[in-house]
Length: 505
Image 1 (tube, helix red, strand yellow):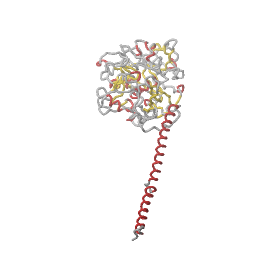
Image 2 (cartoon, helix red, strand yellow):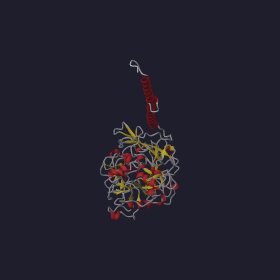
Image 3 (cartoon, rainbow, N blue to C red):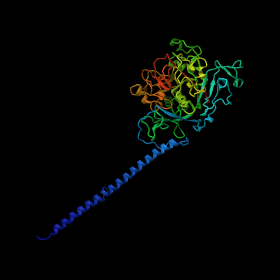
Image 4 (cartoon, rainbow, N blue to C red):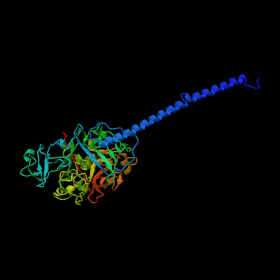
């Protein structure tokens, strides 16, 4: 043994140890799971994550830019961020309307197809100078939906119609009556043409855009969808416009019933100009008025038909004129009137309430409606009346809670889902995805006296009162309104409204 040096064995051991340490170092640094490889993977993941985040940001910016700058021509929805939006106020906003044909192509107001006239329908036009209606041919300029005109198409039926110089209007042709003055109105209806819409939600003072309701759902300004509001079975028009459900046929009967659709595609609907009344007058009691033996009329200056139950209303409306597909108005059809009124093609403002305590249609006896144009959906004599105030109006729309129902075809009613406990707020939340009915889209709560646009009343149906009522009551400003929706178990102050659909629409 050499005491002054390193033995051969020690040298060999040292070399081996160094080699082992070197191997471990190389493995840790260069192996598949080594430091260098891990650093490379981390860098790649970081880069990929940054690219993904940048792409998502670009998607949001693209979505917002496309929405704000849209001209209604794009056929594709931009990408929607997956993160849900926080709730924002839906208590104020603007409604953007585009008219469309049956192929869902956007058309101008001037190109709205001539409404189909059939049966005893007689087209009429208002003459401001003589303050009277005159009979028109369908080829005449008897309507104009342009923004600066707001002359929605009006017709009268021949029940009670008196025309100057015409011995018997019931047997006379439109040609024989054309150009002549109406001396007494027949039942009157107003045409709401097929359209698509978007809603822009605004802050209370109107200065800030908060979000939108479009063909995707209710979305914030970054395109994120409020949870539960993503629209199902929606028909998109142009750049995220929503084809209003009242004019369309859905793929299944269940979807038609849930969304208030029809059995075929429609160019439009004829809506009663006033709340319904009866030719025989009111008996002011259920025993006298909850009957099927009276005859409906739609005329101004008479007391609306009340003290009548929903199922009796429904039968009477169906029996009114089967040729014209007469039926009790649904929530979707009420919403179609409201949205058009709120657009540039309607009054675009709150509708003055019919505060007549005798429930006279048009806001007063006789021809009071002629001067009560602030109560019209157009702000002139061409619009629909009594949609704010007057009498509460039952619609053929209800919660599917087993308390009450309508036994009919799916396209004649609109049925809403029941919430977990059938309470007002739970039922309201369970129907967040329903659109076009001026309920969730135009309110903030299901149980609030000023929860809708214009501070209107908002109470969703529940187990106590499953049917919707619309339009409110004459007595209080907060208890009525164009976007009023409520529930009520009694019927003494409740009326209704008719809708007609011509078969070739």
